[in-house]
Image 1 (tube, rainbow, N blue to C red):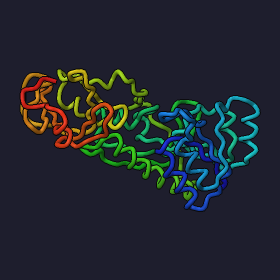
Image 2: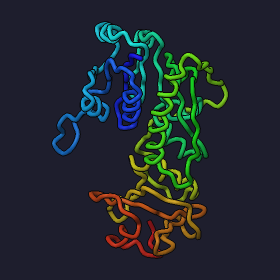
Image 3: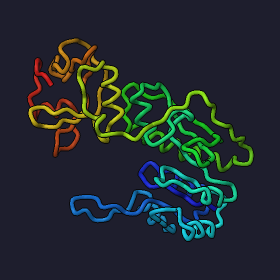
Length: 301
């Protein structure tokens, strides 16, 4: 098929690679414009742009698709379909209507659960035991279109957003190639009205750990916000991010360190920290982290 690919972050790259490997013709790749990044704040292309250029594909990064000129340029590509994966811009109706077989979106949840911006984070933070990817026909509403194909996977009890992100990215790549191969045989299924939830964008205010909360919720907060933005505490003027954890054993005052392996009491129960990061340093396993900072039994965080 002749396709337009629209995506921006690392999550989208495996899908682009899969479509190329499957022999589809990529008429153009749309992504967000380069953004200032790094210490020098120089414009840096997105992961999708970098990969597309390495594959010698045509890249476009308009700041908006609302203008008549951009819509005409899109239509002139005469695509059979567009594949959208975390692109980052709202698609006007003229764009949605342009490809002959419509716009197909890879969404990282089991729709209608977790429509919106942060479905992977929210699934872990809510304690969901499963998630997946859906191939959806796009329409004007926010992730409201009918589903062509869905693939389900359990969420591991210690899985972080980072790890689940990578798994779902690969699942989405496999699912879109399958959906395109079977497109004539797939029946679009309208999403049910029941079970709709919205995955709001992560607010940095959600990242500070409150040790008076139950251990299960703190554990899910830590794993759901890892690696970014990272659940954190301020201890003696030092910001410490917690990047991996599991449910621990023991009890004590909220925030009390219970042992030498950094098991920490919560409002109810306890969590054990598995991976941490101090400001200005890289992530470390707990044993290595504790060599550089004294968080001994009885310390209150």
